[in-house]
Image 1 (tube, chains in turn red, orange):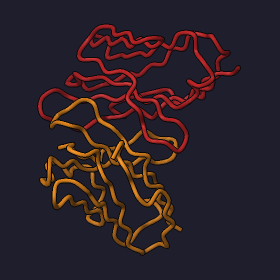
Image 2 (cartoon, chains in turn brown, yellow; image 1 turned 45 degrees about the horizontal axis):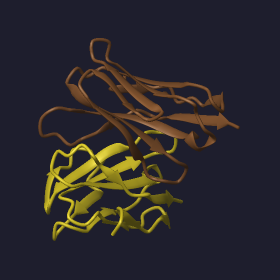
Image 3 (cartoon, each protein chain N blue to C red; image 1 turned 180 degrees about the vertical axis):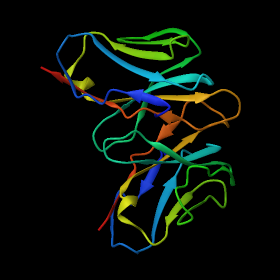
Image 4 (cartoon, rainbow over the protein chains, first blue to last red; image 1 turned 90 degrees about the vertical axis):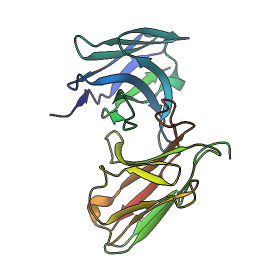
Length: 112
Length: 114
């Protein structure tokens, strides 16, 4: 079993829909949780970063972390065709470690 | 430079050939990372440098993989005697401070071993 599980999709939604993307994890030492967006043939780009449990909002994006359930989510409101990309969750332990553990990524297509 | 720069962007290697992939991090960034991303998968950690010191190489899959950052800026990932299973995108990333949480990725070097 992988440390981080993510449904690969693909997920297809109409423009304007609310999108929910999720990851589960097994390592209770994870304290930092991130969401990256990766366009085709590009490198991952950091979207959201959250420390420990709680919610964080940035424009149309909301990240949620539930450490008790080992579950994280990314919500995208009013989705746009330009949001079409692969969304990767990533996590790391506290302390001095720098190693990010990524999910497999969910491919999202927003249809105009 | 404005971002993390990697070269070559695309490389086709014959099985058994040695390859070298270059990463030029954002100027002044202390930390540098290499990740491997297979098709349809998330990136997997290979190795980490703080300045010129390689502090973690636990993700290197075999002794055919070697990374260096001799002057604490540009880094090279070398793969000796390439195998088909080495075909992947090799991503370099950098961050401003050690244990920094804002990590910037390059566009990757796409390696195909035939």
